[in-house]
Length: 183
View 1 (tube, one colour):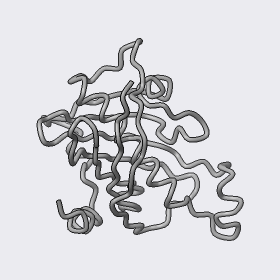
View 2 (cartoon, rainbow, N blue to C red):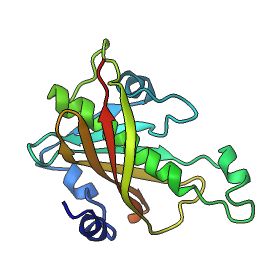
View 3 (cartoon, rainbow, N blue to C red):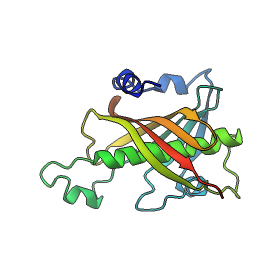
View 4 (tube, rainbow, N blue to C red):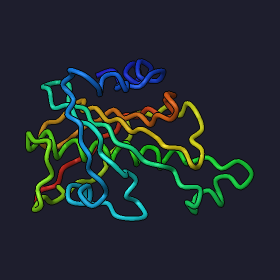
């Protein structure tokens, strides 16, 4: 798979538009907050960087998920990155996309749009970032749309393309890989 080509192709416009989430599409609208998200991924504050899951498409070959987060001005990261021009770090934008990709994994592995009360996170470790483009600064107090699309999954390794979108502009597009550990 040509990751550089995928990054370039997805750097200008969001993979999922608001129009795709309304009307007759293959997306299922979701309304899951952090209490439900904690059931399907192992991350916790201060690294629980996805606030809501808003839509998922489980169509074969099109697996994709949408979520949101508001970047709080009170985040301590802005004290040093950068005091005179606060910009949300690219590494944390990569993390947001990765977390959303893990959420997507729950839905497509279980072939469901639900999060059952007894759901539990799969043990997982990041292995590599295959590429990333940082295209626009992400500023405090902005609501971002997070999008993750499954690229590959073989039961052991998973690769996801993710975007961080603010005000219809792609701020970050990345491709990352994780390994799923045995229970």
